[in-house]
Length: 299
Ligand code: ADE
Ligand code: ZN
Image (cartoon, rainbow, N blue to C red; front, top):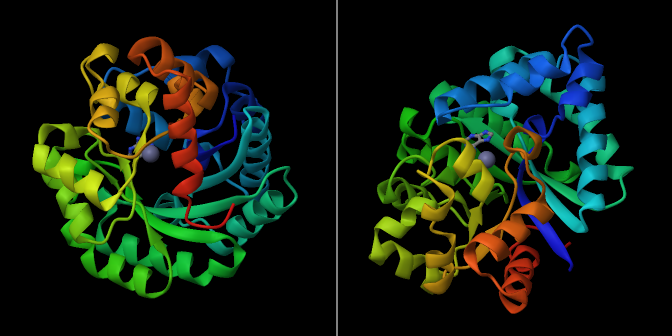
Protein backbone atom coordinates (compact mmCIF):
# COMPACT_ATOMS: atom_id res chain seq x y z
CA UNK A 1 0.00 0.00 0.00
CA UNK A 2 1.41 3.39 -1.03
CA UNK A 3 1.60 5.75 1.92
CA UNK A 4 3.31 8.86 3.21
CA UNK A 5 4.73 9.57 6.66
CA UNK A 6 3.67 13.09 7.67
CA UNK A 7 4.75 13.26 11.32
CA UNK A 8 8.17 11.91 12.21
CA UNK A 9 10.87 13.79 14.11
CA UNK A 10 14.40 13.45 12.76
CA UNK A 11 15.95 13.64 16.22
CA UNK A 12 13.41 11.17 17.59
CA UNK A 13 14.24 8.62 14.89
CA UNK A 14 17.66 7.64 16.27
CA UNK A 15 17.77 3.92 17.04
CA UNK A 16 19.76 2.70 20.06
CA UNK A 17 22.30 1.18 17.63
CA UNK A 18 22.82 4.45 15.76
CA UNK A 19 23.08 6.45 18.97
CA UNK A 20 25.73 4.01 20.14
CA UNK A 21 27.62 4.51 16.87
CA UNK A 22 27.53 8.25 17.54
CA UNK A 23 28.49 7.88 21.20
CA UNK A 24 30.30 4.54 21.72
CA UNK A 25 30.61 5.08 25.48
CA UNK A 26 26.85 4.45 25.80
CA UNK A 27 25.67 0.88 26.16
CA UNK A 28 22.60 -0.38 24.31
CA UNK A 29 21.03 -1.25 27.67
CA UNK A 30 21.54 2.28 28.90
CA UNK A 31 19.97 3.75 25.78
CA UNK A 32 17.06 1.29 25.90
CA UNK A 33 16.45 2.23 29.53
CA UNK A 34 16.32 5.90 28.48
CA UNK A 35 13.71 5.00 25.83
CA UNK A 36 11.15 4.10 28.54
CA UNK A 37 8.86 6.71 30.13
CA UNK A 38 5.83 6.85 32.30
CA UNK A 39 4.66 10.29 31.26
CA UNK A 40 5.04 13.06 28.67
CA UNK A 41 7.57 15.01 30.75
CA UNK A 42 9.73 11.87 30.95
CA UNK A 43 9.58 11.52 27.17
CA UNK A 44 10.60 15.15 26.64
CA UNK A 45 13.59 14.59 28.94
CA UNK A 46 14.65 11.58 26.87
CA UNK A 47 14.14 13.50 23.62
CA UNK A 48 16.39 16.25 24.95
CA UNK A 49 18.96 13.66 26.06
CA UNK A 50 19.11 12.17 22.53
CA UNK A 51 19.42 15.66 21.02
CA UNK A 52 22.37 16.47 23.25
CA UNK A 53 24.35 13.60 21.69
CA UNK A 54 23.91 14.98 18.16
CA UNK A 55 26.86 17.32 17.95
CA UNK A 56 28.11 17.61 14.38
CA UNK A 57 26.66 17.99 10.89
CA UNK A 58 27.96 14.44 10.25
CA UNK A 59 25.81 13.11 13.11
CA UNK A 60 22.74 14.72 11.57
CA UNK A 61 23.69 13.40 8.13
CA UNK A 62 23.94 9.87 9.54
CA UNK A 63 20.55 9.96 11.28
CA UNK A 64 18.91 11.45 8.17
CA UNK A 65 20.29 8.66 6.00
CA UNK A 66 19.16 6.00 8.47
CA UNK A 67 15.67 7.49 8.81
CA UNK A 68 15.06 7.79 5.07
CA UNK A 69 16.33 4.26 4.40
CA UNK A 70 14.09 3.00 7.18
CA UNK A 71 11.05 4.81 5.75
CA UNK A 72 11.69 3.44 2.27
CA UNK A 73 11.86 -0.05 3.82
CA UNK A 74 8.39 0.51 5.30
CA UNK A 75 6.90 1.16 1.88
CA UNK A 76 6.79 4.90 2.46
CA UNK A 77 6.87 6.71 -0.89
CA UNK A 78 7.12 10.27 0.47
CA UNK A 79 7.81 11.82 3.88
CA UNK A 80 7.65 15.17 5.63
CA UNK A 81 10.24 15.15 8.39
CA UNK A 82 10.07 17.43 11.43
CA UNK A 83 13.42 18.95 12.34
CA UNK A 84 13.81 20.44 15.84
CA UNK A 85 15.45 23.67 14.74
CA UNK A 86 14.21 25.25 17.97
CA UNK A 87 16.40 22.81 19.91
CA UNK A 88 19.39 23.51 17.63
CA UNK A 89 19.05 27.25 18.25
CA UNK A 90 18.71 26.71 21.99
CA UNK A 91 21.92 24.66 21.89
CA UNK A 92 23.77 27.15 19.72
CA UNK A 93 24.32 24.64 16.90
CA UNK A 94 25.06 26.10 13.46
CA UNK A 95 21.67 25.53 11.84
CA UNK A 96 22.84 26.46 8.35
CA UNK A 97 25.66 23.93 8.38
CA UNK A 98 23.60 21.22 10.04
CA UNK A 99 20.69 21.59 7.64
CA UNK A 100 23.05 21.59 4.66
CA UNK A 101 24.23 18.14 5.79
CA UNK A 102 20.63 16.95 6.32
CA UNK A 103 19.45 18.23 2.94
CA UNK A 104 22.41 16.67 1.11
CA UNK A 105 21.57 13.23 2.56
CA UNK A 106 17.92 13.71 1.75
CA UNK A 107 18.54 14.51 -1.89
CA UNK A 108 20.72 11.40 -2.23
CA UNK A 109 18.08 9.16 -0.60
CA UNK A 110 15.74 6.61 -2.18
CA UNK A 111 12.45 8.55 -1.70
CA UNK A 112 11.46 12.21 -1.92
CA UNK A 113 11.30 13.97 1.44
CA UNK A 114 10.48 17.48 2.63
CA UNK A 115 11.01 19.19 5.97
CA UNK A 116 8.97 20.96 8.62
CA UNK A 117 10.99 23.13 11.01
CA UNK A 118 9.68 22.90 14.56
CA UNK A 119 10.00 25.52 17.26
CA UNK A 120 9.69 24.50 20.91
CA UNK A 121 6.79 26.04 22.83
CA UNK A 122 8.54 26.33 26.19
CA UNK A 123 11.57 28.07 24.60
CA UNK A 124 9.38 31.10 23.87
CA UNK A 125 8.84 33.63 21.14
CA UNK A 126 12.40 34.52 20.10
CA UNK A 127 13.23 30.86 19.57
CA UNK A 128 10.11 30.49 17.42
CA UNK A 129 11.04 33.57 15.34
CA UNK A 130 14.52 32.16 14.78
CA UNK A 131 13.08 28.81 13.73
CA UNK A 132 10.60 30.39 11.31
CA UNK A 133 13.30 32.60 9.77
CA UNK A 134 15.48 29.55 9.15
CA UNK A 135 12.51 27.74 7.62
CA UNK A 136 11.87 30.61 5.20
CA UNK A 137 15.57 30.87 4.39
CA UNK A 138 15.69 27.19 3.42
CA UNK A 139 12.45 27.03 1.45
CA UNK A 140 14.26 26.26 -1.78
CA UNK A 141 16.01 23.32 -0.10
CA UNK A 142 12.92 21.32 0.76
CA UNK A 143 11.44 23.10 3.77
CA UNK A 144 7.68 23.18 3.29
CA UNK A 145 6.35 23.88 6.75
CA UNK A 146 6.65 25.42 10.17
CA UNK A 147 5.36 23.89 13.40
CA UNK A 148 5.65 23.99 17.16
CA UNK A 149 6.29 21.05 19.47
CA UNK A 150 7.53 20.50 22.97
CA UNK A 151 5.49 21.08 26.12
CA UNK A 152 2.01 22.03 24.97
CA UNK A 153 1.11 23.32 28.43
CA UNK A 154 4.23 25.50 28.37
CA UNK A 155 3.08 28.06 25.80
CA UNK A 156 -0.29 28.52 24.09
CA UNK A 157 -0.34 28.81 20.29
CA UNK A 158 -1.60 32.42 20.48
CA UNK A 159 1.78 33.42 21.87
CA UNK A 160 3.25 32.54 18.46
CA UNK A 161 0.50 34.08 16.33
CA UNK A 162 2.73 36.60 14.53
CA UNK A 163 5.34 33.95 13.83
CA UNK A 164 2.71 31.71 12.24
CA UNK A 165 1.48 34.68 10.18
CA UNK A 166 5.01 35.43 8.99
CA UNK A 167 5.64 31.79 8.05
CA UNK A 168 2.35 31.52 6.16
CA UNK A 169 2.85 34.82 4.31
CA UNK A 170 6.30 33.56 3.33
CA UNK A 171 4.72 30.54 1.64
CA UNK A 172 5.18 27.92 4.34
CA UNK A 173 2.49 25.51 5.51
CA UNK A 174 1.55 25.29 9.19
CA UNK A 175 1.45 22.01 11.12
CA UNK A 176 1.69 22.62 14.86
CA UNK A 177 1.37 19.96 17.54
CA UNK A 178 -1.88 20.56 19.45
CA UNK A 179 -4.45 18.57 21.38
CA UNK A 180 -1.83 16.00 22.37
CA UNK A 181 -1.58 16.68 26.12
CA UNK A 182 -3.85 19.76 26.33
CA UNK A 183 -7.57 19.80 25.54
CA UNK A 184 -9.64 21.08 22.59
CA UNK A 185 -8.92 24.72 23.43
CA UNK A 186 -5.35 24.13 22.29
CA UNK A 187 -6.55 22.80 18.92
CA UNK A 188 -8.88 25.79 18.50
CA UNK A 189 -5.91 28.08 19.25
CA UNK A 190 -3.78 26.32 16.63
CA UNK A 191 -6.61 26.64 14.07
CA UNK A 192 -6.96 30.34 14.85
CA UNK A 193 -3.24 30.65 14.07
CA UNK A 194 -3.84 29.11 10.64
CA UNK A 195 -2.93 25.45 11.23
CA UNK A 196 -3.53 23.36 8.10
CA UNK A 197 -2.81 20.02 9.75
CA UNK A 198 -2.76 19.21 13.45
CA UNK A 199 0.03 17.15 15.03
CA UNK A 200 -1.88 14.59 17.14
CA UNK A 201 -5.11 16.53 17.81
CA UNK A 202 -6.53 13.52 19.64
CA UNK A 203 -8.15 15.56 22.40
CA UNK A 204 -10.38 17.15 19.77
CA UNK A 205 -12.69 14.22 20.55
CA UNK A 206 -13.70 16.05 23.75
CA UNK A 207 -15.45 18.82 21.77
CA UNK A 208 -18.15 17.77 19.28
CA UNK A 209 -18.20 21.24 17.69
CA UNK A 210 -14.46 20.96 17.03
CA UNK A 211 -14.84 17.46 15.59
CA UNK A 212 -17.46 18.78 13.18
CA UNK A 213 -15.25 21.75 12.28
CA UNK A 214 -12.26 19.50 11.51
CA UNK A 215 -14.48 17.26 9.40
CA UNK A 216 -16.17 20.07 7.49
CA UNK A 217 -12.94 21.97 6.78
CA UNK A 218 -11.03 18.79 5.96
CA UNK A 219 -8.29 19.56 8.50
CA UNK A 220 -6.38 16.29 8.93
CA UNK A 221 -5.05 14.95 12.20
CA UNK A 222 -1.56 13.42 12.27
CA UNK A 223 -2.43 10.57 14.63
CA UNK A 224 0.42 8.71 16.37
CA UNK A 225 -1.15 5.90 18.41
CA UNK A 226 1.95 4.31 20.01
CA UNK A 227 3.35 7.72 20.89
CA UNK A 228 0.19 8.57 22.82
CA UNK A 229 0.34 5.27 24.72
CA UNK A 230 4.06 5.62 25.57
CA UNK A 231 3.75 9.23 26.79
CA UNK A 232 0.49 8.46 28.65
CA UNK A 233 -1.26 11.16 26.62
CA UNK A 234 -4.05 8.56 26.76
CA UNK A 235 -4.73 6.28 29.74
CA UNK A 236 -4.44 3.05 27.75
CA UNK A 237 -4.50 1.82 24.15
CA UNK A 238 -8.20 0.99 24.24
CA UNK A 239 -8.99 4.60 25.18
CA UNK A 240 -7.37 5.98 22.03
CA UNK A 241 -9.95 8.04 20.09
CA UNK A 242 -8.61 7.20 16.60
CA UNK A 243 -11.63 5.08 15.72
CA UNK A 244 -14.14 7.59 17.07
CA UNK A 245 -12.48 10.43 15.16
CA UNK A 246 -12.41 8.36 11.98
CA UNK A 247 -16.05 7.31 12.38
CA UNK A 248 -17.00 10.97 12.90
CA UNK A 249 -15.58 11.71 9.44
CA UNK A 250 -12.36 13.48 10.46
CA UNK A 251 -9.48 12.96 7.99
CA UNK A 252 -7.06 10.71 9.85
CA UNK A 253 -3.47 9.96 8.94
CA UNK A 254 -1.31 7.42 10.78
CA UNK A 255 2.25 8.33 11.76
CA UNK A 256 5.05 7.31 14.12
CA UNK A 257 6.25 10.58 15.77
CA UNK A 258 9.55 9.18 17.15
CA UNK A 259 9.58 5.55 15.99
CA UNK A 260 12.36 3.84 18.04
CA UNK A 261 11.57 5.98 21.07
CA UNK A 262 8.00 4.64 20.93
CA UNK A 263 9.04 1.12 19.89
CA UNK A 264 7.11 1.29 16.64
CA UNK A 265 7.22 1.55 12.86
CA UNK A 266 4.70 2.95 10.38
CA UNK A 267 3.62 -0.55 9.36
CA UNK A 268 3.08 -1.36 13.03
CA UNK A 269 0.83 1.71 13.40
CA UNK A 270 -1.35 0.47 10.51
CA UNK A 271 -1.41 -2.99 12.11
CA UNK A 272 -2.45 -1.44 15.42
CA UNK A 273 -5.31 0.39 13.72
CA UNK A 274 -6.40 -2.93 12.20
CA UNK A 275 -5.91 -5.18 15.25
CA UNK A 276 -6.90 -2.86 18.11
CA UNK A 277 -9.47 -0.65 16.38
CA UNK A 278 -11.02 -2.81 13.67
CA UNK A 279 -9.86 -0.79 10.66
CA UNK A 280 -10.55 -2.96 7.61
CA UNK A 281 -8.66 -3.01 4.33
CA UNK A 282 -10.91 -0.28 2.87
CA UNK A 283 -10.40 1.90 5.94
CA UNK A 284 -6.64 1.49 5.85
CA UNK A 285 -6.61 2.33 2.15
CA UNK A 286 -8.53 5.50 2.96
CA UNK A 287 -6.08 6.43 5.75
CA UNK A 288 -3.10 5.77 3.49
CA UNK A 289 -4.83 7.81 0.77
CA UNK A 290 -5.22 10.67 3.25
CA UNK A 291 -1.49 10.61 3.95
CA UNK A 292 -0.81 11.16 0.24
CA UNK A 293 -3.65 13.64 -0.23
CA UNK A 294 -2.68 16.00 2.61
CA UNK A 295 1.02 16.46 1.87
CA UNK A 296 2.37 20.01 1.71
CA UNK A 297 4.20 19.36 -1.54
CA UNK A 298 3.51 17.27 -4.63
CA UNK A 299 4.97 13.88 -3.71
N1 ADE B 1 8.97 16.38 19.92
C1 ADE B 1 9.14 15.12 19.52
N2 ADE B 1 8.05 14.41 19.69
C2 ADE B 1 7.11 15.24 20.21
C3 ADE B 1 5.78 15.10 20.64
N3 ADE B 1 5.12 13.94 20.54
N4 ADE B 1 5.15 16.16 21.14
C4 ADE B 1 5.77 17.32 21.24
N5 ADE B 1 7.03 17.52 20.87
C5 ADE B 1 7.70 16.49 20.36
ZN1 ZN C 1 5.56 15.03 17.21
